[in-house]
Length: 328
Image 1 (cartoon, rainbow, N blue to C red):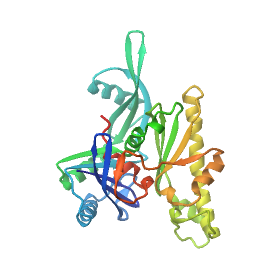
Image 2 (cartoon, helix red, strand yellow):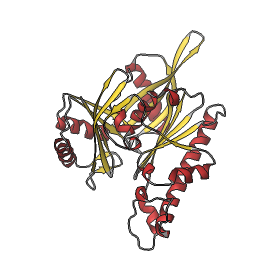
Image 3 (tube, helix red, strand yellow):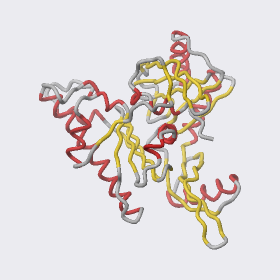
Image 4 (cartoon, rainbow, N blue to C red):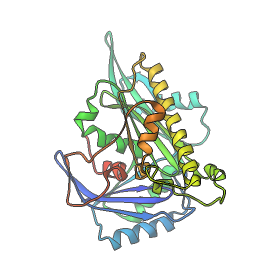
């Protein structure tokens, strides 16, 4: 049995399950509140307190397993599409590190990895198109320490956008589309935007969602949880201003992604846009974004290959369930 954990600034999602061939068995899902000031843009500020929260959540919900997967997400994670010679991984990492550090003028220690997205043939030379990733070492070290404290037999640290991708890869109807698609996971603090083309990730971007900046639109200055606002019903003027301003900014990010894809891929347009995450709790949001972009916005339903007796909203656990999946 495997345990997958997704630690957000507001909530921690936990999924217990396993992969059996092409089936993903989900045994348990849990959400607990993230203590304040324990996570800052993906970096663990108090690993001991976070460990206590996870230990209690696992114990109280009788969740056990031999393996643990923990997702990482941060606006400080850098991604870049590169073409490199086909070479052993150690050499490829060195080539990518040099490219990333020179192009971005990086100074802090980063951990570098990559995903091969395409194989290119140029005469007798084979090259790899890769999505290169650079993660601040301080973030990685915090999660390594947390994994050690949790004391599972095996542990794995994964990128949240990669786990989202894995849930798409097991859905041929979406992954095999001829034209590129955008997947956006929008929460309360960060938003992850992915472009998937021919079943492979070609671009990933994480943006900060500073909800507090919208509070000056409200007369009472009270915090409003946008995920609990339903725009299809009568809402207060303050709530409407907050959510619609937030939705407008999300639509602008979609627009930037569409323009980026148009310029990077020989004017290929986006086929579909899918929305997941906490934003799907807010009623009417998909329709508002669709109207702003003049296109359809879709939500992802639970794929047939995911088997469970539980009743839960799949769009809230996509990346966490992705941590159960091994594509190899």
